[in-house]
Image (tube, rainbow, N blue to C red; front, side):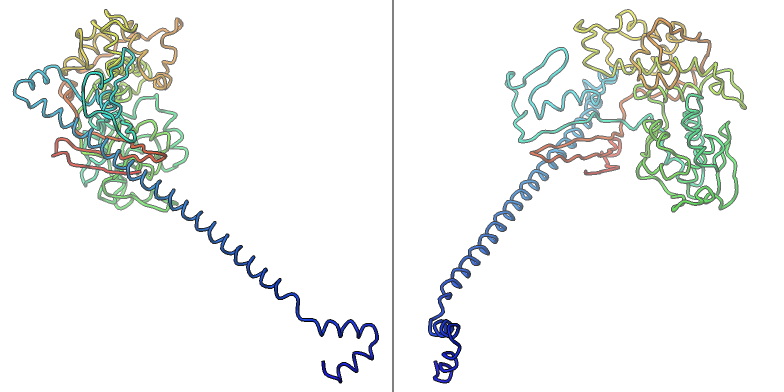
Length: 478
């Protein structure tokens, strides 16, 4: 300390003495600064290591999930390819020199059994209400052992549905138009169309909706008007866009890719799609009636188009008295098809393992041991006539129909003691029906399979045309 500073500090008394001592003492806090630096370094390293470990674990789980996604995807592809292989085998069976004629006579359709047989490839085990079979116990190899699982959906034929893309042109397909009109004509659907007409004021009735569907798909811009007798007239050139006033889109004027696109048609409600989705398609299928693939709504539309005693101005199914009789027949036919569609129940019925509809009732309308509802077109007419003349047989098969459709058709009380079926006096043009009926194996299928691995699931849905070198018409992965 300089002498000048010492003199001034000394003159400050006790405070000056303390200050002088502190000025002469070396800095004691240098070691504390080093400790702070070390602690800060350790803290930073700890945070970095924890972050690195966390990020590594996240990446590990992401990689594991990606691995599971890839394996689930290829399991789903395997399921789709397995269904394609089995469906193609049906046609090989039909063309085989020795067994082919037998397959044709029996009308054996392999696709109806795939939901029972295909799971054995993944599980090596077949489970059914009448027993089970472990393939490993039989010495079979190549089954099971999958690291994962495959869920198979039953292949769904597209035949027997109305192809709305038949309207994709400048000329209206009259046969498709008549089929669509007859599908939606029955009074049972009044409530479905009432809500659509209420929301879309431009629509007068359900047949206006048919015109709107045509205009959305056809290639011209003219307004199409369809009356209650399914007659077509032009409502104005270049005027079809008038239905889309206030909407952010207009008519597509080209074929639909998916049936969901019908929701863009003014007046098509969720109720309409829910009611008729199973009877419509966008894929190229022939306009033939497939009774083995039909539900009550399809039967109703087909029967209404062949009721005798009508006139050009009035379709008999528009009359509630006639419609009630046709409802009974349509539900009985659906129940008959459902009875033969459940193969395990059918086998149990024939082998006596399960109680079901009485054997004499089955034999009234089919052959003993029959595994498909209608083996020949003539079988449909024969079964229909049995239901027309024996209402008790019709009532018993109605119990196998869809309960929701029974309610829709006003037959919810079927099976109860208070239910009295209507007298059936309606007749049909058998010859005209036989000309449109097809009972052979379908060729266009929607197939779906889901692969499961770990926590991942992937589904593939495809539509394939087996009659055109197994050409894929649709493919979606989700």
